[in-house]
Image 1 (tube, one colour):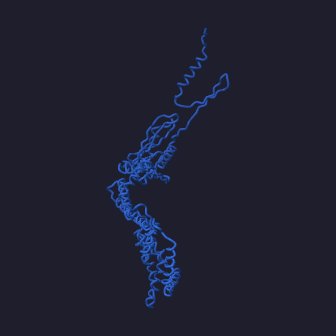
Image 2: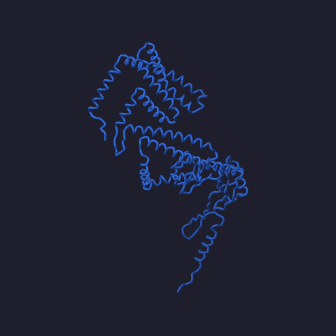
Image 3: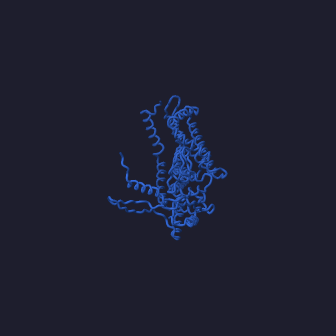
Length: 467
């Protein structure tokens, strides 16, 4: 392990720094130029509000706002009002110094730094993510600033000298920074390229939505893998050593990552067999909704109340899934309705069909059909059947609309809805009065009543004496 520093070296660096400051900064021409830059800050700060408002008016130019890149560029211009005014004032002072044949190296240095910041900030507007954009701008400007002042090479040598040997592998601070920067840039490039390819794939209408999602996911995985491999190669990592790492990953999968890998493989299977696809209306257990997206680990299902359920892909493979739009978006709904026994079921069936046909989402072909399903204890049981072709819009609202139409129609034509009925029979006996509550029905309990009367007659008959 190399020794990073020692007290004598620190003292030497401190003395050299003092000498450099005395010989390069504490000079009258240099101090005057620094003072001129500081004075230029005052009018730039005072004028920044006026210039920012003028630049903000560019957002009203619809011709420029047609492209997303121009929109982001115009949106960032008001924030650059202060550095733009400041660099113009410094360039003006620099021109005056040149005409007066006065030293202007510090003015040129400050102006170059400001120019680099403005150009880099405008260039990073092409990045959609504001965090990435600001991070890239800061890193790029830092490198540009070190290069402008001539400190880039000494800084690299200093960071590379801070190193640690692990076996035959040398890890330095410069190598770590280089790897992080390379990985960040390559990952951003891979993500940007994958988004472009995904947009192109989505425009190919000959491909099904499942195949489009599968191709986009596989392409993104390949690009990210290539970015990681390139980042490792930039720091000198031998890629053949990844064989050992791959064996460790295999052991990890066998011990604790079975479910994760199962979800990943299940996601690929779902995309290949096209059993579900984005936009399908499915029901899994108590969850009903339409598929928003197919991820590598889960499938996002949005319900009618706006809740997103993230269902693991493995559950969609191993459990029963109702896909209401797998081969056809048409869906038949069944709504039970009961009428009283004294009402005409033929007329009620006609009214139910007419009421269902009035609903906006009910299809005309095939039209509604009402069947008589049976004779209940208190009602004649009917069932309204109708078809819809937009199950993603929900079932409850269309069922409610049909039932409201049936209610209005029954009220208009005096069709009575059933309700439970009971008959109260009072019976006198030698003992206390007994109250018997029986159900008024169509003869279901007649056999039981006959059996009770027979038992009473047998009880009143004289019994033979037993020896």
